[in-house]
Image 1 (cartoon, rainbow, N blue to C red):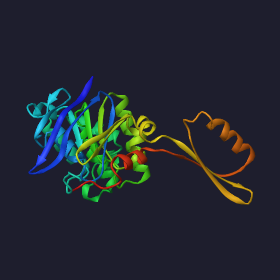
Image 2: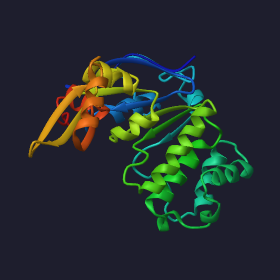
Image 3: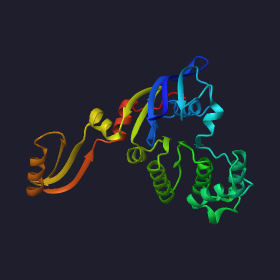
Image 4: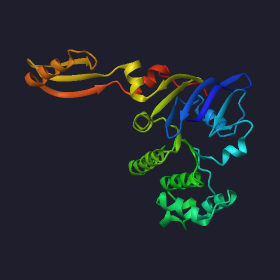
Length: 285
């Protein structure tokens, strides 16, 4: 079952085309990553899918709702976290969440459950302005999860976070996926995308230039190889051999048995694919 369906979605600002007629679908319980350089159209796409921007043309449905004609109904089925904080800084964590919950007709119990899941119980009385970025991010995600949304949109959710905070959010997203929540993620972190996402789409200058599982994109568009560095006859030697080559296992066995290996490096990553399909340049602003 598709929770997000996009067909020919296009957004123009005057003579500038931000999103150039893209099409894709995201299944229920899938983690989908939308990647691309700054200005490629990622945030514009998310804003159209969450009803904040009207498309110039094309269509999109989220949780079975048309984003143009059924926006209010759709909002009850989604949660959204944008990169920039959107909390009331003078209010406490709990006050921010209770305010959002009251607007959706939720109980204090729903708010307490969200805080507990995000590890916010001990922080609940602290003003948001006193929190670190990691705790603010947890608060925004807790707010987005109020009402148990079917689809969760996350725009750069781990940008600027330390490794511990990032690991916590990654574990949370995996848990939500296992519960059937569909997650739509934008990120510049290719390692994060490769580890978390079932599939990724790569935007460049408003066009969808690649779409598949991360590993499949690497195999199809880049290929994996092993780069060896060893010491032989008084000098350093290097070799790069493709993993798909049938002779690779025998060659590796010979090298490892007979030579002094200094370094083994696997090449061919989602980062390589990203740089190749986007031309290695930032998109226009």
